[in-house]
Amino acid sequence: MDTDGSLICPNGRKLHFAYRRPIKGNLYGRQEEIYACEDCGGYPYAAQCKKTDKNRTVWLNRELTALYEDVLHNPESIHGRCC
View: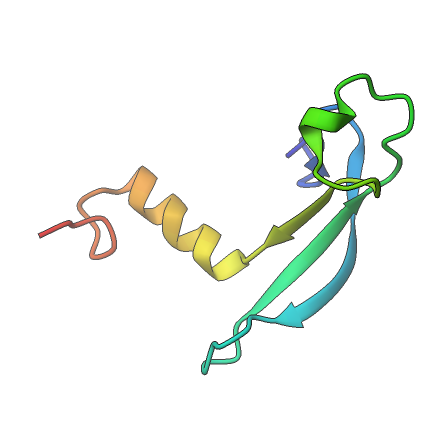
């Protein structure tokens, strides 16, 4: 992420919001956001950076990301306890 909160690919290009979709098999209405890179053309490491011929795509689940950050930054929280 850059300073204004935008997702950035390894090539330094912004990933733009494409669409939102429900997570398969989730009964609680959770959704994931899909972001796509502006343009991967001319990137020398594109084969290692992405798996298809299309531009790089990232799936983001904001709820899960918030839980991960809670665990990393506060191991004494209810989500950070292992036992």
